[in-house]
Image (cartoon, rainbow, N blue to C red; front, top):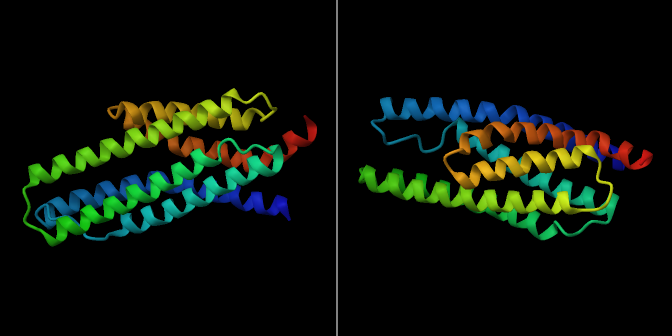
Length: 200
């Protein structure tokens, strides 16, 4: 039963890895369409918003399952707080983004320069905060003396790289490229980690 539970998490991690590039492409297409067809007013809620909601729910579930795996298989609880912080950062950033979209729709027309500044400040704050949390998670995983196995360590290295890109802000496109990679490695953790534990 436990194996089935983590197998499901593994397949959902694969789904998340496939969903992330699609989300980026759809968001770009909708942004261009909004700028041309709606005179920069923007789409209130489009298909990309639905995909973002699905992706966020998947991310929360996968983080919780990763925390559960670390607890059950290794008795490791040191990441509990950071994982919950990562979840709350995700939820809060989504809430603020929705609030900004609603404000843009309700208050239109708005000073586009002012709105752009507000959005850039929000995006920068969200990226830096997420990046710091990702780096801390990676550091804690890499410092552990227990036999976590190559997949968890690989996940930690990719998470570290993504966190550094997020904190730098300017390199954030590389962080988006690394996210599907981290999801694939996380899927391998869910699929194969049990075997590593059995044979170590």
